Length: 100
Image (cartoon, rainbow, N blue to C red; front, side, top):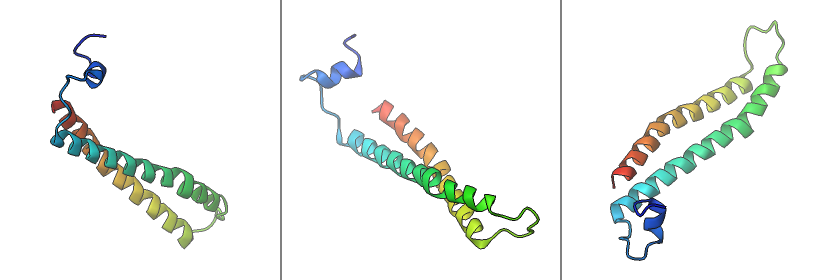
């Protein structure tokens, strides 16, 4: 490993500890990552199976979707929009961490 590698810097007792700005950015990025993970798990494991089940139960000649299915789709898309908004925030926080 070269002396400039980050792993070496973390193991070197003479290395300077990360500053408070770095730790705040890292905490924010970790929070955003965890929020995105929870949202994605809700989409995949809670709403997607019920959407698939309700969609399969619809009569093909029906002209209107059932309210329960529409409600699940709305929740699924809300989580999608949240993750789409949090994604660029996570990237920007990662870039800011690289500069610190």
